[in-house]
Image (cartoon, rainbow, N blue to C red):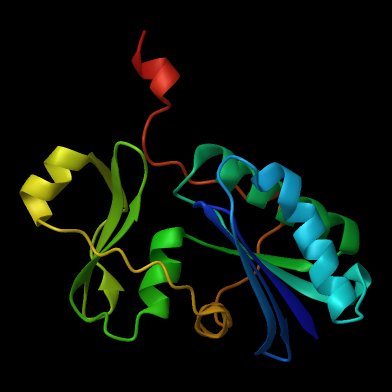
Length: 188
């Protein structure tokens, strides 16, 4: 059984392929405003490198936000399309939860995802998210929480293990999570 992991919520595009729950390939590419041109080729190159076909994929895991508005939409759209056309299962995880799960020293921590103007964040106590994921502009966040955690390492095997007990979603029901209001609408 092969699983494809897709993360496009930040400038670091991450693709992972697991076989029977073991990570066999991970590719990370720094990409500023070019996820749309490198995501599909990176997936294709990864599958070719392992000599497997898209039809061998039985599960797609995608980070569905929050993060880069365009990056999240792209990752979710590609994941949904692959899951639907391949009749594969699909599971989603937020960027905040994925980072929290990847961090073995979580216990009590604030997990953040930075954008140009501020931070998406989740507060964890005893390894559990204590409230909904929120967004604060940089100055407000730093006044409230001081220096943010900037660990952006994704442990794909841990994320996959966590999702084992989470039911898959119908590809048509997978949605991106944005949290903050779209800036163009805020200007009206």
